[in-house]
Length: 606
Image (cartoon, rainbow, N blue to C red; front, side):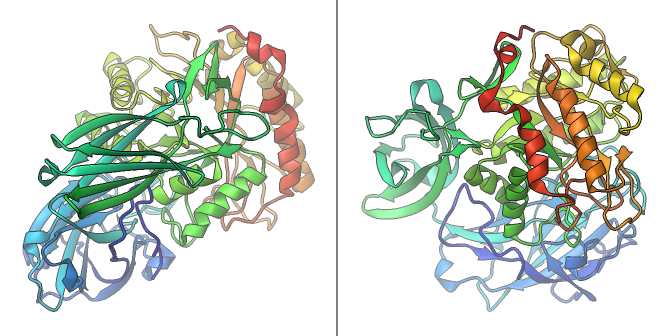
C-alpha cells in the first residue's frame, strides 16, 4: 500500500483504518452508471486502480490521459468488530471534483470541490456482516473552465504552463471510530504578545456535561494541565504558556517561537471524560508565531523577516498531484532549504496536510494557495468561496502558513482591471479570508491588478538572457524603487486596479526567473534559457542581484522549484535531481541574508 501514514497529523487519534490500496475501477463515458445502479453489489468493475492516485498517473496502474469525465470506484472493507457501537466516520482527503458516496448500495452523501477534505457518518449504513462495500461516483468535467482547476489543462495534452489533469481520488481515504461524546474540531490561535494560546473547541452534542482535559507540553515538559466542564458544544479558552518554565530569549537560536530557523512546536492533547471513563483523546501541536505588516515590511514574531521563497507546483512524475511517499515531502523541503530558500509558495494547489506537517516540523514558510478557475461567472464565485472556507477550516492551525493567496494573475477574474464586479469579488474574497482567519496576510491578486491587499506581489519575467544587456538594465531599473515598481505594467497590466492604490503594503517580487536549463538536452521551455550549469548560475546570480539592488523589494519567490512535464525551468529536474551544485545557489541566495540586513530595510518608508 502506498501512502500508509496517518493522513491528518494535526488531529491524531490512535484508532483508524487506511482504505488506500487496490480498488475496483470503471470509466463511465456514457454516464449510465447511476441509471444502471453500478453502486449495487451485483455490479463489478473491469479495472483495478491504486488509490490514492488519479487514473492519469503511472502509480494508479492505469495511466490514461484522455477525457473520462465520469469514473466509479468500489471496494470491500472489513471493519474491526470492536468498533461496533461507535460512530463510524468515513474521510476523504481530496477527490476531484464532484463526488457521490454509497455504502452497501445506499446513498450516503455528496461533495463538490477537488481540493479539500470531507467526511460522512456511515454508522447507520453498515450491516456488520462479514464485509461492507463502498461505491463512489466522481464527475470531473475536463473542459469546464468555471471550476477551480489550477494547472490542470482543459485540453487533452499538456502544453506551456498547463499540466496533465487529475480526476477522482488523489488523497487518502480512511475510516475512524468515535464515541457519541467526541471532539469534532479544535482551532488554535497563538497570541504571541501575551504569551497565550486561544483554543476554540467544537464538540459533539453528547459531550455536554463531560470533562475536557487539556495538556500542553514544551520540549517534553508539561506547562499546562487544565480540566474544563463542557457546558455547550462550542467552547473557548485561553492558556498562558510562560509560568517561568519557558526560555523566552531569542538569541543564538534559542527561543519559544516558531520560525524557519527555530521551528519550536508545542505538543497539546485533549481528553474527553465521562467520570473516570475516557470517551475521546486527540493529539495535536501548535507553534507560537505572529505575522503582520509594518513600515512596508513583513514582520515575523515582531521582527522584519526577508522571505526567500521558491514557487512549488507540487507535481511528481509518477503520481502527478499525489506524492508517491511521505518522505517525498520531507525531501522537497530539505532540498529547498539546502538551496537557500526559507519557504515556498504552493502554486495553484492545496497541498496535502502531510506536507504542511513537515513544513511545521522542519521550519519552512508556506504561502497557501488554491486552484483557480479560468473564467469569471456566478458559478466561479460560488466554487471559489466554498473552497476557501474549507481550506481555512482544514489548515488554520499550521504555523508554517503565513500568507493566503486566493487569486493569481487575474485568473478567474480576467477583466478585473476594468470590471467593478470582478473587483468586488477580489475584495470580497480578501475580506472573507480575513473574517475567517485574522492571523495571516492575504494577497488580493498576486502579480498585478490588485485591489485591497496586505502584500503588493509583483511578477516580472522581463530580465532576458545574460547577453541581452539592455533588457536586463530595464529589469534592474523597473525594480529599483517603489515608484518604478508601481509605475510598471507587467504583462501590460497595471500593478493596482483603477481606483485602488498602494497604501504602504510590503512589496515582494513573487514570480520571476524561470530560467530553462536541461542537462540532458531534452526539449522543454523556460522564460529564458541557459546552455550549461555555469551559464545558469551566472544568469541566476544576475536576476537575484537585481532584487538585492532594489530599495523597495522586501522578499521574493523564484520560479521554480522543479521541472514539471514540458516546463523545464526548475532548479531541480522533475524527478528531484539538482541541476547544479546547491551550495552555489545557496551562496547566491545568501548574499543579503535576513540576519545581516542593511539599514535601508529599517528606514524604508512606503
